[in-house]
Length: 382
Ligand SMILES: *Cc1c(COP(=O)(O)O)cnc(C)c1O
Image (cartoon, rainbow, N blue to C red; front, side, top):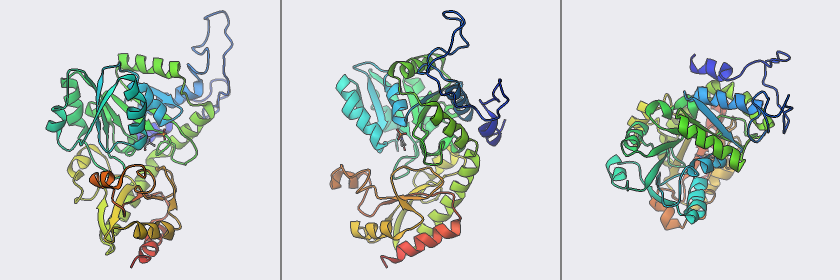
């Protein structure tokens, strides 16, 4: 089955009782058993729910994996992965990792004796040099937020296997439509399903996919034991969103490319960070491992000041000022004062988050309206 067909059909089936074509919302906490232990595979809804089962099977199919495991948020999924480890274990993670992941690693898991090293994934040899005897996991995110940095999934997955280390890819920015890390050798792929998979800014959820039987067993154990499981209503919304993932991602990518080209040619704009541009330092790797380049990008202004950035943020109408990404509607954000506000200016500038850096999640609206909106906003600083 090709991707678009899988998005609509894989993992789901009509309701056996009524023929309902859409997966029912099984709003139940428990299941009646004919005799103790004689059940249809469902005993208690934290462990399993039929709406969630279909979502998990659908996600697994989209990532070409054997097992899908879903959570009440992306963070819940990440938590289940790190709980594969023991005190004394060491993790190497990409340094411009999602802020929530950084917080969970350093504020929570570090307290439980897990050690984290954050580094650039630009140069594989220097990452390999950081692998120690107790290194157990490589945390890869590509493209990253907000600078859309690219890590070579195939290279890092092979490095992990060579050193007997688990490789995990946070694939949230790409979605399974653009990139399939398991095909490139990764052990586990992780999604904030809140973003492109849900796609309509109406649900918070997370997911993991793996083809490794042992890892799947342990991750399912963590899902059930911690209990960060999504409710059936949320699973239904995700199943509904996934049916149009390929259509949305095509348009996100088309619009993304056009907006990136427009910004790159605009006299008020300094740099544009979009993996689809040949000027982007990760472009060649992105071209190799992604089918297209999606709708996420960031850019800086020649007038590199907070004031100029704030004028643009208040100057757009269609691009709404908000956190999150991946929904049908276009969003605009300012990392220096929003997601990265707690990081001292000198520190954030070292990683490229300068005062005028603006992030866009380009939606699926009509491109002419999006360009007109940005043209109008950029006039505010001329
Ligand atoms: C949003 C996001 C997360 C966290 O997911 P939640 O669903 O918000 O818990 C993790 N990684 C990336 C890249 C994200 O964008």
